[in-house]
Length: 514
Image (spheres, one colour):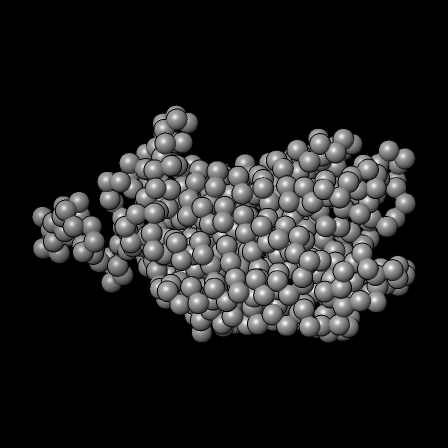
């Protein structure tokens, strides 16, 4: 005859379907039912998260390499393919146009088909068309390949952060996402070093210019990332929101075994996983994956419309204002730092009209331009360290607001600078402060939205991000020789606008992912 305790256990198990959120069974004194947050916490923090950081960080670095490589190949490529000045501008902007398209397309599909699968597709797109561009001898073919390369880059950036954050315990999430963001700085440094090592060298073959070798080498991080993600699991948070609790729990158990260094998960305390949301709309959206591409496309647009309705609308609009302001200001200035360095090396100030400067830069001056660009890239390091150590202490909202306002103040004073040392010092300060804004925004972007809409929201943000980058860069180029104060004041105003808008965001520090 079963004992009274055994009868009680059977009775409570019969009630599970009626009240999943409150039933808790005891086995050997340990709870065997928990929600996603408690399951992730129980899996610990250790070896798995380090491996995940390296894999996602390498992929994030590959995106930085592809974006920043254009500025290094442009001088040699423009000579070899006889590119005119308007075509140079188009080549500089084309990857951002591709990213604008890819960010929304891939980001939305990641909410339907899964984070890992879309990461593999977008990174493969990145590597394939990047490699094809290295052997494209016609300018328009080269431009097309770089556009398609940008489509891949635009897709992987938002999905990487979304995927990575959904494995993190809440108390470590801010610092870990900040660590992931530091790989962008690594990509910046690697690109500069690789360009310096390869492009000035004599070509290996008469038909293979050194800058083409550089472009081909830049594809290696993205291609190797595809292989790495083939070995990684799907996001357990995504699986849980799809109603696949057993698969999600298996992924978390694997995390537990790697973090604890054990060969089985028998000691893992949670046996049943409670889905945090079972709303009909979400479950219908999750089921779209089983339908055809028409259904998936329809779901993509429905998800976008949902973001602009109800309580999500205010948050999304604030984030769109911030991301546009930051992207407009950051890329509007950052992409032009080498130009400002060149003007100073030619005997003028940062705001001198290049056409009125008759002194040609010497060989040492050209080296100084590369060197100053390298130092500016290194300036991201202190900003990243501040983000890592203070993100969970001071909070995302405080860091985002303060860094945007200080960045705007830095830009305002650049047009007063007249010497190389002054311009270099201000560019280093701007680089160190502005990276805190990007890191804070990256953390907030994955914490403010529910899992079922997260990648779609990041894709929508990506559209404003790329639009801001394109408009900021074009605006700076048009206005800098007309009146230097105008673009500087405009960029400073946009950064300040983003900082004040950040006041309206909710606090998400150490809060469970929705």
